[in-house]
Length: 561
Image 1: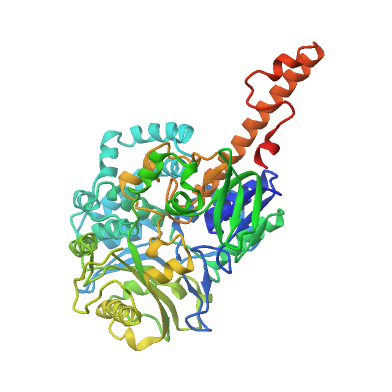
Image 2 (image 1 turned 90 degrees about the horizontal axis):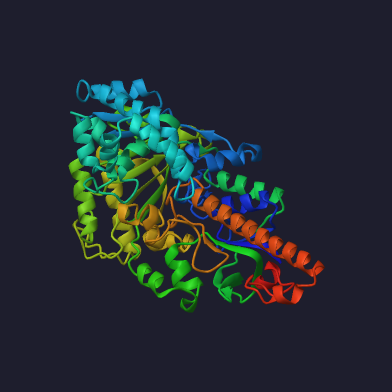
């Protein structure tokens, strides 16, 4: 019997398993798919000469994460690579907003949209200089971040107090209008906000857009050399070097609960895998509380809250093997790893509004990756491994375009949607389609089939909107990984602080499990010392009847069997 079972081998599950192994626990990770990694995987499935990432690709949150930094994954061979520029947002008139890791270069580019906007950008960078480290520490700490929050509060007061707080809760459209006269700075903020499911008019989207922009400015959008799977390989290698084990092809169908405590799991083959101390679930909250744990073990209020759980947008993705670089009309886009395609903030609003109304966008906002530009190992010389994704409704009511898309995403609909996305790229890069050597389409159902946590391709484990963050994630409560079942911890992006590859939900769950075990061990030791003392004084019988919560000689191991 192992000390802990971790359900799911996404980055959060693997981070949790590594921290438990560091604490001396025996750990087994069970993964439903045939390979580990969750949404951090790569392959050569588009073309044998090209490496394509199946899901996530760029990792600014990983670059900033103290959780991953402490794992020292470079010792497992992990290396990072950067594109010459972080991000570009071209426009049809040839102008292009560029995010460069040199803040002065970013500012100079924004001044070309409107004089003085460079100073506006440098002002936002100055705020990050003062509070950025505190934000990162608080973001990746267990909630509530008492120590990190105290430090952050002091820095926020020094950096502007309530005025800064007001800016962070603004819609990103309003923040951009207040800070910039031209489109360039507004596009950088708004495009980054739409990495989550936040419309330009959503409260808090300004803070998220600023956060992502500053992460790009100060950390870049790095990629693992050789493909996203290299990050997973480093996490798996580190775990195995510490005695942990990862078993693939093991779909967990039940968390076994006895007397209110998780004591193990059962797999699809009905095999029982017991856990001495804890079960950590790197699965979505709806899956954990709607399927893996029987309703009889959960409070009615939690079940009612889960009916109100909101997913982030569904996703439609296309991977390409290109026989040459993307032929951008705006040459500034050629050297960026990430490219945003939308003709202004108004078009971003239009697209988000269509999704909210259940319409497949006719002019979808594309988030595009030029992977060979970021990492030359991804494809042959003078070619490009590329991808783009866009968001679509979970339930499609109609098509805002002319292709009659219904959201059933049969083979014909997939082809028409992929063609629509390619036509969008073609507007900004004439001749793009002639360079496509091969493509792969990943519709919402395809993404979910490859990783059950990606419900219809929802990539953030639940909406990033304010009503499902902090103490509201995944439901109103404490914002912590503990669940109503003793010894069971939520370790996925459905938990605070949410989506992105940074490992914080897994780390929070692992630390909570370790703390709980230490507290139980300390309590049992105190009772044992008291029993021993009273035994020497002839008072053992009376003590055994007192409310320690354990019968004589019964410790945690018996409770978990």
